[in-house]
Length: 110
Image 1 (cartoon, helix red, strand yellow):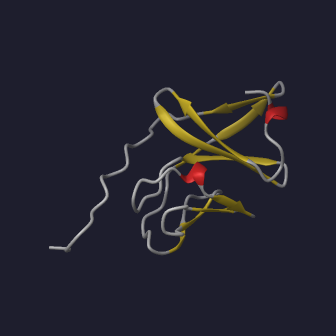
Image 2 (cartoon, rainbow, N blue to C red):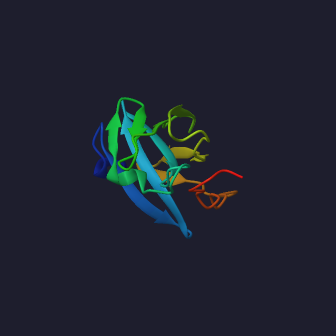
């Protein structure tokens, strides 16, 4: 993907080799993470990007786009991140080792 297609403060959903990825640009840097909330598997691309945090549109969980760390409940698990490199004016995102997130658990915890 050419680097000019994403403005600072924007995010975009991509599908790379069968993996749903959320690409974000903040302060001129690019970050990629799984496009699925670790709480209820909602697409994070439907949420909001605030600084280095993406906010899930369903329940408001927050994730750090640099590390995937969960920053606010109701999610408690991180989101997988992927390395991004810029080469010859194009973005390259490696999804090698991508892990399918576990199914969400709702209802009584037994």
